[in-house]
Image 1 (cartoon, helix red, strand yellow):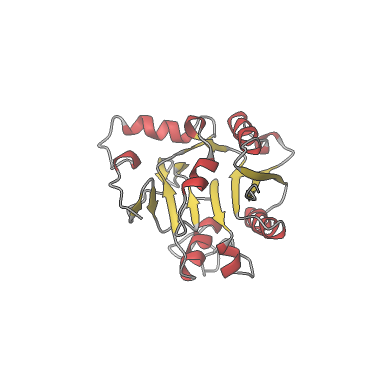
Image 2 (cartoon, rainbow, N blue to C red):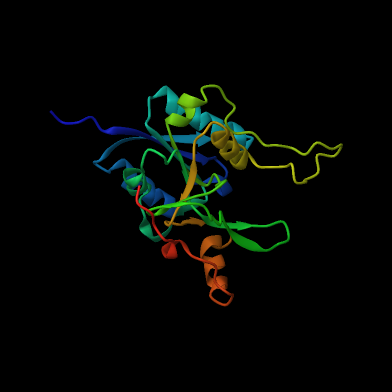
Amino acid sequence: MNQAKSKILLAVLTGVERQNWINPDLTLTIIKMVRDPRFEVAFFPVTDIRPWECARNKTIQAARQIGAEWLISFDNDNFVEGNGNPLDIIASAGPEQHVIGLTYGVSKGDRSFELFPCASGATDGAFRETESVAGGVLMVRNTVWQNIPRGPWFRWQHADNELLELDASTCGEDVYFCRLVRQHGMRVWTHEQMAGHYRSVDLTGMVCSLDQIRPKPVQPSQWVTQPR
């Protein structure tokens, strides 16, 4: 008897306006994933749900409703570098990998750019533990909504001041989610596979190019792995 395939919900945050359309590289990744014979992949476009925290909470709710083992969510402007397949990452994940987010280029408030996250925690093969990951390419195991059955799982945390101005207490909905996961004893990881992030250019590629002329931090390929 054939063993039942693991069910994956593949969700993409998208919309009807052009800036919210699914980018071409992500389209190819979606086709690759839904054709992957190792898994049962259901595609779920999250269309024009705002604010973003609501859209992300919707992905958790939908994954729970179909009995998915994993939720893999993309923002419409992200993709996997090097023609990679997120299902390869899922296939190699151990029981301690509850949340996995890929590193990609992001803009900072001072008009500069960086890779996020820059993880520095324990390693497990191609995985490295981190405090927080971004939501652009996010993989969530069903243990998260089993251990945290009531949402919201994602919430934008505003500053506690009259103008709601940004300060140290402010965090985006993805960082809030990671903190919530860790408060419940689960772990957050990134992976040596990187993601792209389209703006006028791919920010990931731009940051990596700039890094060639700057002192280099430790890159994922230099991680010292530890056995599980």
